[in-house]
Image 1 (tube, rainbow, N blue to C red):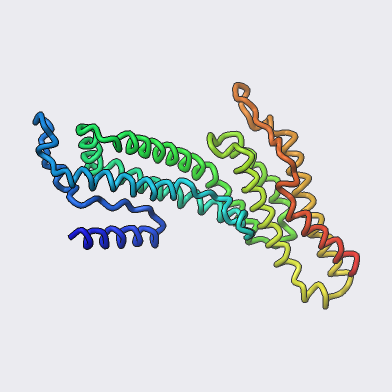
Image 2: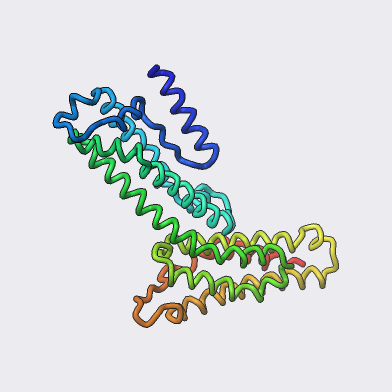
Length: 291
């Protein structure tokens, strides 16, 4: 029976992983907890010690699962060497919010609350761990909810950049960065350099992606010299306009903060945002010279 329950728990967790959710399997014998009469003086005599042990073991297993979920960061694709666009950021926080809400609901379910109460009644050393785990999930859920809510308005602007001709992107840059500044000023949890740098790097990746699609290599090499040079210079102008607009927004961030609100500047180096974009611009300048 122990092996069968272990197999069922493993399958339950794998099904959750397939769905992008962290599912917490209940320990064997957890159904017995609901029948306990807490008015009795000696609870230890009413409950099989193996049930308490199984619950304590479950708390350990859950803590590993939950810590794995909490440690995930949206910057992982960038750190692994890929070049994600901002939609990856939005999808990450939407998925994180859904998963943490799923975990929170499981920990807050009646069966689990009964199990936690039992650990408290028998003065188990694992009860404080359970409480700390629940607090961590609640705090992370609040963070993910806030960030998911504040990033949502970006969706429309990103879709516009992806759908219009790249030559029309210049007019969209200002409104896009306006929303980024609003996120910085109004989000309780996204206003850290590490997070805003990731978002700005991903926006740079999107612009590079769209610029590459616009500058089809075959068309550039085989087309009329004047036309090809014009397109390259046009892309150079749009990407440099993005950098200039970024610097203007950086200098005027104060306008996004309320009078009674503490202003937080973008005090990080521009190189952290534009390293890949600058490299792409240098290559374009070489192409323009050779054309």
